[in-house]
Amino acid sequence: MITTAIKEKCHSLKFNEKEQKELLIKNSYTLRKLIGVLGILLPILLPLLLLFTDGFKEVLPSISHYYYTKSGPLFIAIMSLLAIFFIIYKEKCTDFIISSITGMAALIVVLLPTDSLLQGCLNISENHIVTILEKNPTREAFHYISAAIFLLSLAYMSLFRFTKTSEGYEKAEKQIKFRHKLYRTLGVIMLLSILIIFLGSDYFNKIVPNSFHDFHKTHHLTFWLETIAVECFGVSWLIKGGEFKFKK
Image 1 (cartoon, helix red, strand yellow):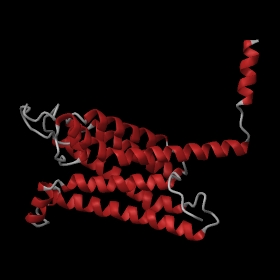
Image 2: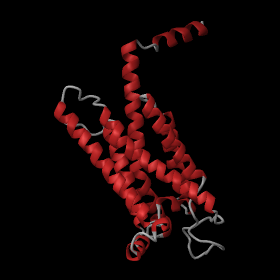
Image 3: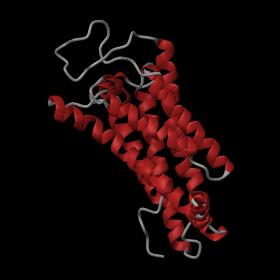
Image 4: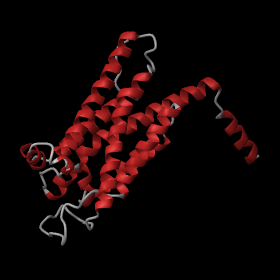
């Protein structure tokens, strides 16, 4: 009797082709929204946690540097979730490949951290710092490359993949064009942010003026530009997830 009841229950859960399609679309929208929300929250929650725990009001040189602080577990959790969501995100074949690369890059960013905030002995006066790693140029190089791939992949999706579809707006040409303009605008802002980050890095200190390089480091522009890029990525995915409705 129990077996029969279970079979009847399972049978009642079967979906026809139309229902299955609607369920997949809803699940896809939900996943996009989760990715967008996590992206938006990442650069906001990390400094806020240090502010509440230690009264630390400054921002760090980059988002990745929060790995070494009390915000480290939060950084690892959000980046790992983003990596998993990107890897399981399935749309068209091209989107699947790009999102998988993005997810793997996010995992490497977590597994191979950037340079430590302090080298040598840990300064106990810096209460927000909880760990350090020995300097390793190879690890740091892989981290920078993976972070670049992660951000560039997000910009690519916003510029070239999201503008290929018109879900929910097939019969509203003006709204399709408006959404695609938003995607392109957000993608361009991301690319400009990434470009300025590159120009302010040590690899370009012989090309750009010393004044710009010093200003870049003193004001932690890498953190702020990463924040702009990640916020744009988050908004882009929320739009793609149908969070913002535009009149047709």
